[in-house]
Length: 305
Image (cartoon, rainbow, N blue to C red; front, side, top):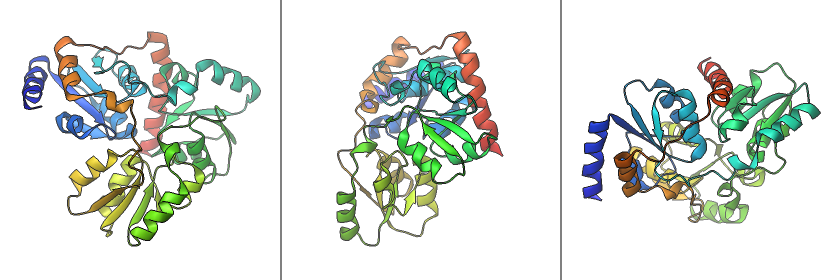
């Protein structure tokens, strides 16, 4: 580990590189990263990039694609090219085009957890942190929302618009693991704990939460909360960041088995080899990137208001 870390530090300086990591990365990968964040925080960071020539993105495919769309002149690398988001692959550009024909008056709002080709068909993007704000910003009374059905349902409960999930059963396999029974058990075991649940979880799981929050929302909430103990309903390594930033508080995973195997494909050794060999490079064709970037920038404009 130490040997890999020393080599990473040397290569970063030599190649003017920056390492970005999602909150769901392993502890070791988070520790070698220059910045750790949720999808929105990483999007914003990617938009702000000026100095580095190379960006190593420790996340899944759609995240690296988004960085490549925003920064076409920079070399965007991902340590393991097999790190794909299954949910993002549940929605194709053709699916969206067919839905547009069926619902010509609907706006298309896509979760950033979508592929570049799908983003190119969207009117605007959102993250779990700003989804309600984005939908409320649109004049349309009907919204095609994808690819996560549970996030669509979460938004639908908070806006006065018709939300149509696209596809009908898009989901995150990790967040589908959580269930009410075990949360009831944890509530009994830790009666003073706050339950924080991600909006990609099923509605019946969300209903047991004290707060339904994006991972970035969890970070901000815990920092402000007077609470001392938190039950965290999302991928288990979210607790790595929460514990690092709040060492005096206690965090309990709502499910120890909630592990995103796709995120965990990245390792410190692969980060080192990625920098050394400058592979695997993530690129998006110019026309797709041009159209997708418009939807991304519209999201940023809404988020700033």
